[in-house]
Length: 118
Image 1 (cartoon, rainbow, N blue to C red):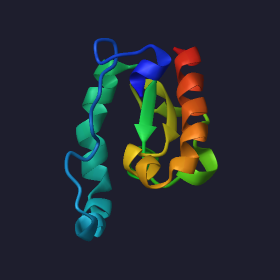
Image 2 (tube, rainbow, N blue to C red):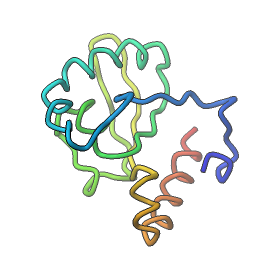
Image 3 (cartoon, helix red, strand yellow):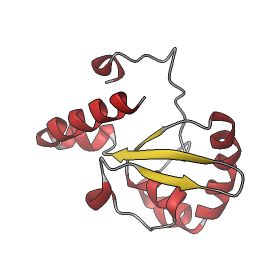
Image 4 (cartoon, helix red, strand yellow):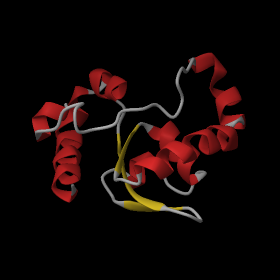
């Protein structure tokens, strides 16, 4: 997907907010949102860049349910902390796109929108 917008892993930092996820343990992760958010905060501060979130869970963790992936996908959102801020855009997780191929066109437009902002 990165190559579609002329990016590669050489100029993009990829990370997971949740390093492993099991559907049956979803509630456990949701209960630990603040821990996950704090552990990622230091990495995000170092990057201080534009962020592309894939899936609803990273959006929920970073913004504490202020935004919905369905309502806010493809929109730039300002992520503000005391000592840094970053611009964030969110779209569907690749696993969702595999299951729902009709959503790929919308996702492709969001990728291009992200690339223009870089």
